[in-house]
Image (cartoon, rainbow, N blue to C red; front, top):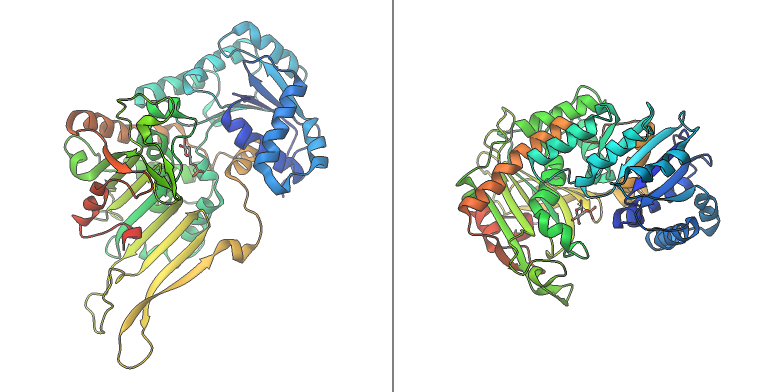
Length: 486
Ligand code: BG6
């Protein structure tokens, strides 16, 4: 394990969902693992007037809940000594004096400003940090997604944050990149020579990327209704997964070598615009249904959702990448809330044999398939055809399955544990560069615009199913089916 230098971490939005459910438990775990020095400090920053002890008590309750069985009261005792709280209204310049005072005489310590607030506050926080002179050469800023809601708003935020921090100090987070399983995808592709020659047109028929959630919008109605699945999930998580699946091997694992290759993929995505959306996209919204046998309300009846909202809770897209490697290979992307199962899965379907010399199975699984499951459990499964025992020469699909949890028997780090420590170490590999973000928005914006002009609105689907029927129809027009429908 790498021991880290001392740091001061400043968590804006310190009483919010992300900080309490994810960031504080992640920092506690890294402390318990011995990675965080006793000279480091962690500040929750928010508008409410809270004492240090009240904040620490809230943090303890959250860590007990989200760390679960591994929570250790003695470790907590040590960790809580690093915790403090600063009351601050992000827009009020005078409030930053208290922050500056707290940071005084610690200029030689790494300073991580983590913005876990709405992205329209990023600019004003940066301006106020600059005015109160707390941005040091050892400072870095972490920006939570979604960064803006389209190209123009993302540009503005990037400009304004860029006026205070240099690009190498800016960590744009996409927590999917911090998942162990996503790193494993890189390991699979670039640590093994086996797959590289197969990873291309002519050998791969199509690729599917599914990020399905069982949960609905929970308590985030306000945010979600303004955002929708395209911006909340596709613009970042799904496009990042697609990049890692499709990128050329980078020359090294250096941040820019990796990010250059991802950028090339984003720039080679065939634009999906105007009437394309009618055949290459499906947007949906859930109606009342059942999740794990329990009745659940429809999207329009969830808290903080406009009664006539047309926000999509489901998106399926047919994507094409215009490069020599990928021309003609469709990639189907799908994500949604209140789907049947929680699963994140990448499925690579290889071509069939040029013509059969044996009796082939009477199933849709005729081709070889590589299924990389990222969540809830991590596994890699390869389907191959083998001889059915007995007389004759009949083939049958069988699986070669690798369950990574069983192979390694250790707890994987939570995405935020890894990403927070990377911000302290100064490792940008798993964070998005500005040009990647620009390219992702540039591809997403025309889809939204075309939906508004040409599409009739989201198609409904019953909560607890796999989304609107139109999503299956989109694949069946190409002669394919979603993996769960085979
Ligand atoms: C977040 C989205 O980025 O990712 C949420 O805002 C979504 O809407 C979440 O639920 C899914 O993350 P995970 O790690 O649970 O797959």
